[in-house]
Image 1: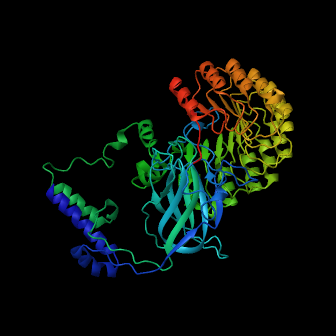
Image 2: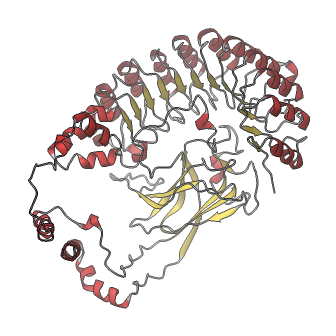
Image 3: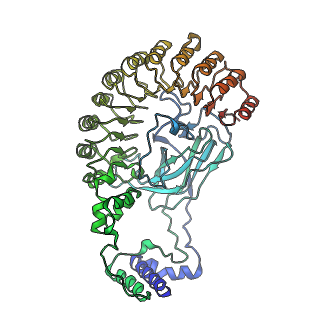
Length: 614
């Protein structure tokens, strides 16, 4: 054993001596003996607030205002150091695990790397490129959602686009649950990088948060001159330092042979691994991530055959690799994806790393068996891309185009050719009235439809009427922030789609409780499990009583901002809906903190939310 360890240490040192620079070789011994780091040059530190918000995956606010939008992260802080729920902050669309529990949530993809936790992102541009020394995030409400901070080599304000755009992780962590909702200045220790940057990307995971995380500003600190990288104190031995040269492999083999009391075993070529049933090897490999699968394919012919089997690629999530995915990447995977059924390309291809031609070439070859296609925030998409999808994916059942806000309105007309669609997400897209009506005319098998923040649809009453007539099997409809749905359109929707389980009418100001529309809704939808009436000031006790009498399966209810609901009505609702898990009564003027505490004590299984403003 001692001989083996000595040989391993010797090989690592020799590998490092070959790969290190001449300067490192000359000075490493002195650095190790002194135990001191090399001094960094003195350079003035630059402090910058974000100049512009370039891109983001979702936000709580609307497309036509500044309240709760990501655009609030540009400039100096508006709220910090105050804590609480403020409209001047940036807020993502979701929090907690409530959304994952809904029927409209898609199943998770297999092979997602355990270190990939991101659910949302935002990209910020700064005036001057610097070598980062610190990143400070001013979180004003329920902090702790940030899981990764990255820097980009691209200058978004430069006219010259580099051929190689690099993203470097400055800091990353698992999701954390902060015990207090109070404001804080989050400044993690970041890694030094070799290029100046004025483009940062923050990725978040709000699954552990008790309420919406609110961000106020992001400060980038850095120096203009490149700092000298610090020398290591002592040599660090890493398995990654080992090369696969024949000489070093021979040294390791010799060490093993001489350290063994027995002679070499009978060689089988694959260590008896090839004697396992083919199906068993396939099952073992199915637990590997995509990156590990590709690496294992390089080990031997047997495993290369197994790792390239199309059965290993029936599901393919490339979202975790968005920063490096390119046309060439898809080209290499193309031959393995003949049986591909579920494909996730969300967040990929921005800034030219993936082109429409590369995407369409892949879809033409591998799209015939696709049933699920996730394309959230894919800004490379064009009308030609959706046309190819409609032609090459006849069996497609799920399509997510969330936040593809740069896609031309005419492109959505091709979606109507996907007549077997069951789930369609068009959140924050530029789809217009003609296109959505065409889709609803031909896609009559729809079960889940998301039209949240689709501001170019002129008349939601007509859309609701079409849904009622053509899509009677709907289980969920998201009409978040639709500005012109009236009680007439809502009445038609709930009368025709009696199987609805989820209905999001948050921030729909044209709906008035005095018309009886919410009571009619409760009577028509006995299967209702989720109802968002967020920011509808007119919701009253009679509406809650109707829900209590007719919707026993209700699990999620959001009535934030109403002035007409009283604590007794809430208590009756909680007694009549034993499956209720989430109840948001924030900014309900008749419900104070004492009422919330009393109801929470009586119904401990229900998360009753009431935000505050300090």
